[in-house]
Length: 152
Image (tube, rainbow, N blue to C red):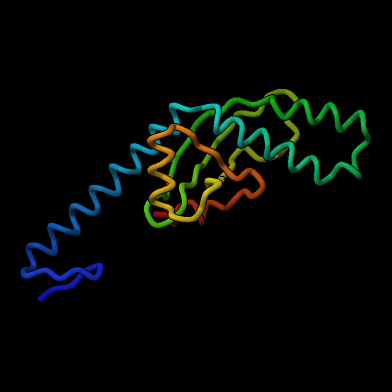
């Protein structure tokens, strides 16, 4: 008797079918999440803008008040070029946002990677985002490309 994911299968064919259906489900689920996030572009725009505000706020004592106000307002000077999604099944939904910086965008980065705010019950929080269309990302922490590529 074969076992996978704590389930018992009477034949090798049943095990292979189960694994194949699981792989198809994960890819389809990723596509649905990616489509939902792309249909709500304000959530990714807001995550980058608020991350910019947060990073500038950490350096408020090093920047003069007038210069800080100008930089704070210039956090809106970017366009989202692309959005890619990972995770959502075993890991939280992770979004990779590539921006096109405009005139005075104060951050040197063009790639931002964020996780969703809710990181407990990963599958259910992703499903909630799909149903509600409400995607909130934790803009306090930006992650590496390694974390993004390794999430399922």
